[in-house]
Length: 329
Image 1: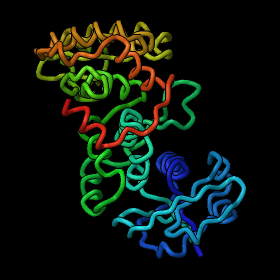
Image 2: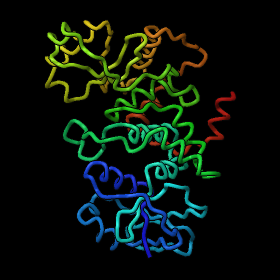
Image 3: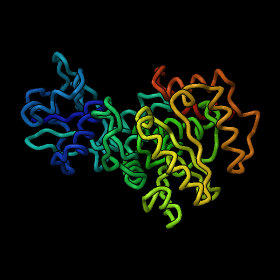
């Protein structure tokens, strides 16, 4: 017998793998042997098992392998597992791969929340231990190439259409959750009440001339959201920036010296529909994007999306067919 962690339990373990350097490898176990086993989780993960939220979620391939155990939940996956869907943690314990975990969540999350999760997997930050300030950095959990390859082998899987849509809406390379939320507010399509502005490049790196380095003594600068051809960018200012205003001003002057226009905004703007609508119009103007007023969201529609992106409101699933119906209207 063996056990396989899935869904949000897999999400937590995948972040731990990236942050703590846990030893994993791709595996091809017999899914008929999967049963829930918390003792196995404890034996293999040790103290890391305490970081799993309850209930702990296990994957099984038929209803007969489900167990009614306190603090656990079983998810049945009856079709063959797609290639590269399982990682081995050792001693019979497995965890779903990042791509498979995203596919599982694609049928359970609203499209905006799925895009947020995808943005985290494609980004370089972790939600673990971020309460005290700057997010911890790690390598991306996946990339578009890996996702496309995985979905090719996930024929007829539930959630595949939703995940493909999320891949079209979401940029890679974010360094924090607010950066992804800002990108989505600006770029999501009208049927999701986004501003539908062309996607930026996340954390775009520019080299600094010797003159600019006299203002800001670094060889390069990264811009949170950048439209390089227009030399325009947005910077999200978290609470931690208050302690380094001097460096931020120097950075701003250095980007100006390189011909870039840089705007700053904070969580107050990101959470306010009227301010974000104004910012969106100004961004569109500066990058030469013509707004379609018939598709521009109302203040209440945009506020609803911002409430989701800033975790003030939770939505249920919005399926692929429903999105297609909205787009066709």
